[in-house]
Length: 272
Image (cartoon, rainbow, N blue to C red; front, side, top):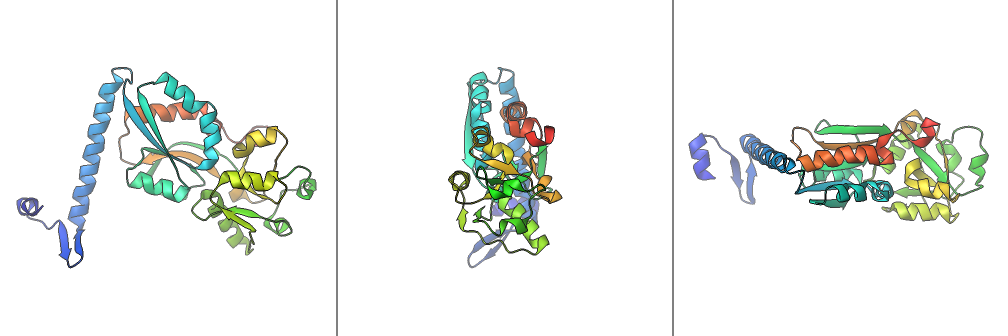
């Protein structure tokens, strides 16, 4: 490192008692290294593409709410079509998924209600409103208008933890409406939320496609909220801007775009 500093005639690290910290020049060099390595990996993957994607790897960060849609068919058909491509799936809330992308620990991420971040490139985006989900025959179902946060104050409420996009969306609307939501249950599990509602204990928030199977079986009902920001919630497939993706990753994105209900079209109720 010292020899490199002497060759470039610039300080790359600041040394202090607890270790070293990269200077602005050092950070620029690290960014160049990552970009160069990503470019080399992309070229290698393109060479593999000439062999019909015989080999490769796709690393995906995905929220639990997407899993049923992902596993239902798209993942299986992708792995069957490209038997030489290995897939790594990392379960992560929206905050963690974005961090994994920035740290280059995954290639792509499936995000729900992500904050705007200029470091990401969005490959696919659909509108997937954040609805209230309730048990069958719940009194809220008799409302002849969209649900408000005030309507929920009478019922036991379950909420995802703060690092998840669903919870951040709810927090934003509650702040705008100056409403304090008292949750009886906090969890980091979509399955726990589903069971909370399905068992009749209370209500929570969920996009329609996350509970599509339960809706079909008549176990859960979705009710729209009155707030435009919740009805405009987006699902996205993103990667790190400026990072050239391997062919295996771009092929996977195209496959998920066509095969996942979350990314092939807007929410079902918007298409009715």
